[in-house]
Image (cartoon, rainbow, N blue to C red; front, side, top):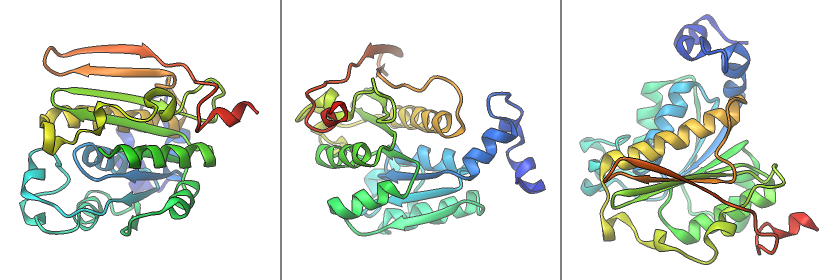
Length: 251
């Protein structure tokens, strides 16, 4: 059940017929693994905590650097030098103390990542490392957990949802294979702060839709964002039946 305080705190989204009390209860009972607490992970963590997602499992192993503050809005000047996970937890606890926060402080191998993914209902990839993205995707396919994936670099962003519970859904590897330009990092190519905020906010939106059970998730579709011209483009993405990661689902 929702307490009187929760009914008041979440009243504006409960008013939406697509959410209502039932959807809010689903959010309260949900567990989400968020990988990366940088430019994308900042708005994702803030919006999911504000929306009342019951448990946020946070994974990040870096420290806050002064160059992060231009876009990583969950951190502030007082956070420089701290572990990002500690900085983020302090901010999220102030925002919504009702949300349970679970910290993953150590780098995860295949086994620990698999266990972390299996312990939640949904995974959100907010990293800028291709190898990590591939590992997270493989763990999501193995555990049959939906994955919300976003990326932003320079003045371009992209977003998609990979859901192994849906037979026709591709996985991350179906789309990107063994590499892409996404292997560049923001420190190498640059990025505009509001762009990662936009993509991260869209990731949070997709996550809430999946968790509360409303709307049309971005499964089988890749959303491309051109910040320079403020244009959005959508591409259809098909599942590769010969994919080395998810192809076994046919057999």
